[in-house]
Length: 223
Length: 178
Image (cartoon, rainbow over all chains, first blue to last red; front, side, top):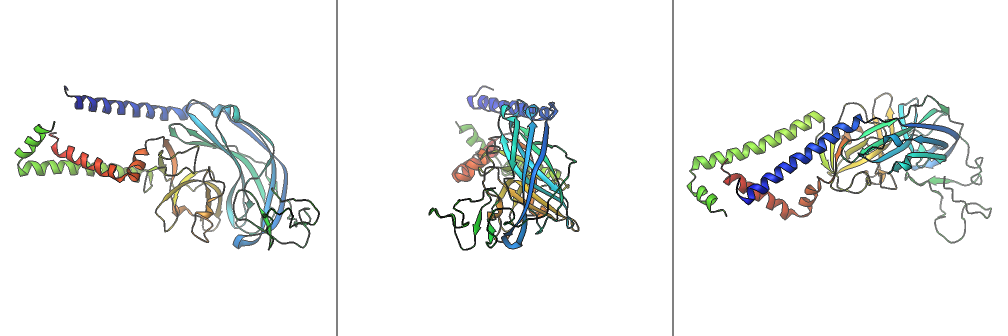
């Protein structure tokens, strides 16, 4: 123990051991910290409309408007880096017994942001089934959260909901007041922004003309 | 600095050299046993992975280490899964955003998306592929250690570093008297 290299080696090995010991202790303690999150979701409106969708053909899309009230501040402790919250719709169909669709998600990075109050939450992602029709299912909506620590295990939880809301029957686009009866639409397959584009017309070209509806209003539907 | 060690090497008989080599092999094989044992315990073919892209920021950054497990229970929405698209080698770490379980067969139809991406992963899947299934998933992320995986990324980006490290370790093992 009298050589510089040997001393450096000893210091390095010891510091590695201590570091991993501390990190391990943090990882083990974190799941035992108390937390009492709460959330409430109220369904305000559901609309079901059919569009042409990828290779599936004419499929039913649900547009949901929810009210979300949540208090997830207790999930924030000294080892919490961020929270990932999502609103999930769950339902059962004849062919598929478990269907879970994320409608909306958000990343919460501080305790202050953990009071979530959204009074008109629209689904961010396409709410469409793997079959072409929902057949007026009953769906329940719950809030899921994922606690991401600085070090350690990922912990997730969710609210349970025994409130099942039945889907209304599907309406045509014309009835929903979106377009003139004769038009045909396709939906971009990307989950993200729901973009409708008319067959043959590209309304994304910014030439000032709304190629879609003949009413003088540019209403690129951004549901 | 190395005169002692070089003198020692010259004095070593064939038997001692063979013994040193055997020691080296023992160390390598015990490391391999630990790794494979961990893979068996977590039921995942690759229980520790390094995050390679920024598509899950701000949760995971490039260079973070992820601990995986692959429990028998089915995948559920919100799980962060590491999966491989069939035909490709690169594992992807993304979150499940849609799930449809077929009643008769129990087959799971899964759609994933990176937190930091605007669109879902259909652009990444094979052409015409709309879902992935449980077979494509290597593991679910259970634990997380920041920054530690940077070494792997550096070694991939600068292969000279990898060779230098291996060469140095090999040399150290041979001239080490213990």
